[in-house]
Image (cartoon, rainbow over all chains, first blue to last red):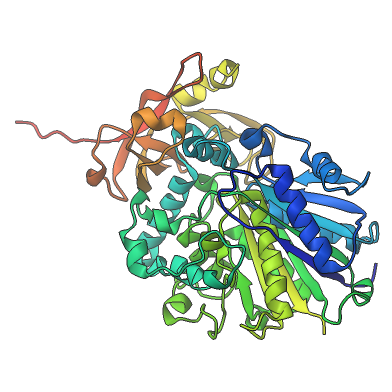
Length: 382
Length: 135
């Protein structure tokens, strides 16, 4: 297919500890929000981004389950898994399915139900995204892995904890506007600095919260999209790459080489450079991941990932506003759903929500400690 | 039934056995069947001496549930003297004594206890190398 691929529908379900809702409830809700937003009411295929439905709710085969319960008919429906990067990876699968010409309308749904198990069990399940036999076996949780990277980063580049702690403040700054966000409030640097240490130097407020949520987007060819809207949002570049599973095998502990590679691919496909990106949804699961992402996607030199943040350039009005709907930190991080939330939020920002006038933005979704990273560049098609 | 998956790791966990590429001599821990440097499949077991230095560490207060009994503890990235970096717990030292660059050596310890059967898993941890002064 020569035509571009466009996003024509977005559904962003409320994120939180949603005791009354099951995985199928969450998915169905965001799917029908996306249908209503798009103007279409059926699709040809479903790709589900989900990390751990098995361990979390003892349900696998959720492609078929969601297609069944959301009333999608007998369409092909499969789950795509790349740990916390599942949503972004599912989005790219959906993109390819439309781009190839195989399907006209494709639904991508991210969903995760995390709160049916106790938090210490959640920690253990999330650790499955690392090397189970050689990292998690030793009691190294996901927070601890990120703490190891953060301590090394602070050591190598002489960066202080308070410089990295600015990232949660930035994400929370945009949260009051974000109707679906889990924590719709601003926080201060002192709040982050004074929050309890989980795994030093990472504190509680450096970490995105455990929660439930589901987001959906609908994709189709640009020509078809123009039948529904005057301002379709075009997917102009996508890139996905992998790195060593374990942090210990990385050539540079403090470089997300999958972010370097994925962003290069996405920029090349879109025909842009980092300078052309107006806004970004960054995978701020931990403060350190924000700094590394900013550097490794080409927005800052190595070791200077906090510079723009400290200058205020990541707030609305700055050179590169990030996480306009609260990021993982304030919107919440329902792991396998996160990548689809990011795409949906980016679409909302580009359509124009009265806060930024942006032509082009990117969403970056990280799986594990950086072993899978996807980058998608979207732009306004008017 | 979790016994086989721990049983088969014995020599790697008790004797720090990784692999060596017979073609390019690249050393790996954990072991690899395909050399990450030259893609040769001509790899053999290689036992590491068990000494290295800390390149990063963290004191963790919120471990996965199988490790709760042992908290708080320090985990570290350790660069073995032969080259590979491995992830392991630090033992026999207080958190505030640790620093990047500190020399450590391997010891065998209980790593975790879990499931209804009360399975105990042993493996490598690392402790600071202490040089005693003669009186």
